Image 1 (cartoon, rainbow, N blue to C red):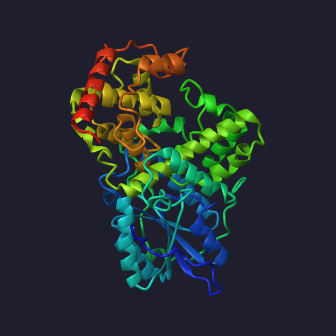
Image 2: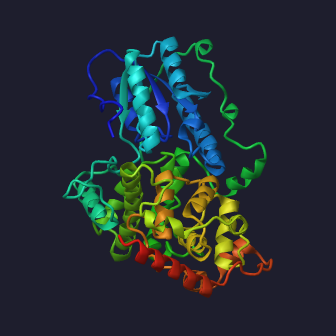
Image 3: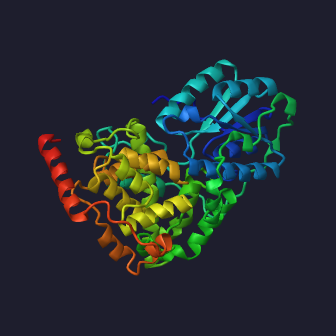
Length: 475
């Protein structure tokens, strides 16, 4: 894909600029490459956020992620206000809003951090062409990734489709460059004086990110969005849970994961900052167990990068299976899908996971795999139906991760789980929730409904379907 604009030049000695920064998935001040350049030059800054969900179709932000976005924007607005910087909000078509704002306010430079979802990348390319013709200087920065998608190719010059070789190449790249360590400091920014009459905008509440029915209030019990909360989450994780992360990350009955995924998705913290703070453990400074845990965390960041790499090179993989041979395996079943969504399958670990998702906007990764396997293999429902549900209900709903994860579970993606791997929820519960604490927490004492399906016979039927498809459609 062509780059929508050239990478910015190094800060020059010319007079300070009048800069409008367009916030997207970079909702932080510190470690923000665009803001760091603006601060170093002493430019005058005005900030804008534009809510344009139609431009993200067919993946407009889901309800749970909109809740997070609302509160993350509120936190960002307050942090900017402490430096006298105004954050404007608009709801509508991005191009005309940016064009009008820059013309009315005498903006000479428009700045943003890149997004890599293929449809948004193409949108940004068109925007860049139109705004350049308006005489604006454009600055686009790489952000939110350890390596920009499209830069790592195999020896044949083709995209990696297997995680292992991709991760080894990424590891060589990140190990060769120092990464930031310690708490980040925001840049000093100069406000651009604003005549509010020229840029009325709207309030954060008028963006309509929160549903009228306040179902989302329960999410406050589990999360605090914002840059400050992201750093506090990382610090807390590094002080204790990381020591046992290698063993505990698969245990839904323990608080063993970092829970940084929504903070990373919204750009409240950078992956460089996370990795930089675990690199000393990778080097062995913390002993054997912390080093193993740091490796596992590094691998999770690697999967995140791999997902972006795949979506970049295979831009339809958010909707279509990478291995299309298996598409005929699945059939929609509205009743079974609804029971799965509602956590009424009668299978304890799956129903507990779906209850956790509904109540907290998150689900433990081990349980995500088990619930996804039941849907796609035992129930034979298309992975896209599960992806749509997760997209609407997860606070960390991320297009690349969601697509990669579901195709991995269903056995139709790059580096996919073998088609014959069908998770047995009962065995998984015995191994990873041996005392049943996770299930008890989310299911309470109410009796389970009758199981939606027999696990043993549905597994046999799933394996027969997959094997038959492989034999009739060899790779």
